[in-house]
Length: 129
Image (cartoon, rainbow, N blue to C red; front, side, top):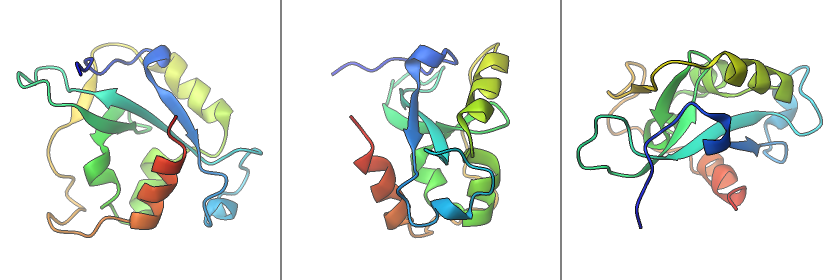
């Protein structure tokens, strides 16, 4: 199965509601279906192997591989990658332009062998089409 290169276009992304996650109530001001993550499956620009992976979009406008995301400490993950409302998501997507930026190295706050947050990973997988 071929994969597509990551894109900043909203039509290439999936908005995933985590409203059923046990910690959803901890997001103040969330809308009825929040919190959300913005995901996309594809390969990073410049990756000659075109290795497909799942990526999550952060407030910075950069994509991070799900592999690293689920290993991040929860406070950092929430601050950068989880959105309380669809309005926050729409504002980010409207301002997202230019070349795709990918965080291509292990984030400084993530240990190489950190265990994955299986509960959170399961919540993401349960929402996939």
